[in-house]
Length: 415
Image 1 (tube, rainbow, N blue to C red):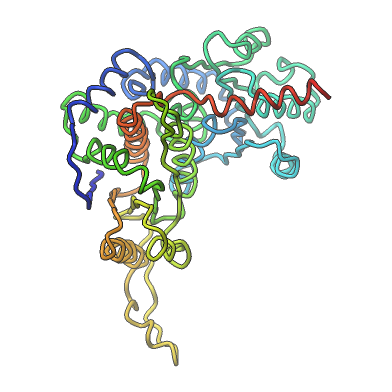
Image 2 (image 1 turned 180 degrees about the vertical axis):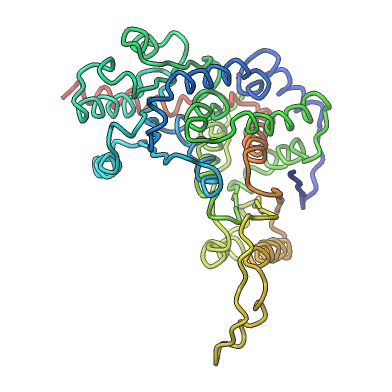
């Protein structure tokens, strides 16, 4: 169960903004909208793969995800939010061309206890394919066929990477071209590695489907997503920074996923030629109460803050009723649970920001599980689309990113 509250006012033309995203969904401008309701065949395909490869998966200790940006951040966010309760496998994420990181991560594993998932939508992501080649070489393979049983490829339908998989008898899952990488966590990109690691992907999808049905079928915007999107777009020039303040360290990688989703989707030139965008900032409570909160409280009034709070954890550990001489000022929490402490810290921080008129809202998850993670993933994807609609931009392209890729290729060709 997820609840929310908004602590700001905003006049909103609900029908206009809602109609824009409904039209995007209907026209297939982005395929993520329907991922929660059209994945039965994929779930069955994944289950068939698991059944047919029991000999490999039984002794597998490591699921190694090779991808960058949207090809890894979503699965990483879910895994690190839920691994305390569910995962039966260790997940490693090779996301960078940093040689120190590559050597450190690959040094932790052995090939006979690992499955490698190579993820590239285009099939030609330079970091991913370079890492793919390095993995092959490290394990004594020249072609993918030599370690086909230890490989899975995930890519767009019709890509050259898909053809490579077909030519080398490597299990390949595909995604539709209209599902952008940063919106792809509920596609094969996220579902395959999460399923192999032991997570309940059907429940993950069901959680996302709950919000899909609320918003698009019942047309019930109980979280005020349209109001929130309208507020953020209307005040983007003065409130140019959106802070996600998550009150659990387990959502640190969820923050990173949100930063990519927000930054790559909303930093655009609109259809009238104006530069639009909101700078995403992810911080963790209560840690950043002792640092970044100072900037929000007394720095420039250019921020809105969204809190995420977990009502119930699986741990009921308490603060011991121990009195330390000279430290009696800390005894007011003795005997309380750490869960109570962190939630009251969240509430206190929110109230402190409201007291100085910082625009805030809060999302409360009953607990961290697959259903709620699916729901909140879809929440932020949908919010991103709604802000993009209010900005009148193309939320789903990334021309600024492509410029750097082109220059990189030119540098190597020139060398």
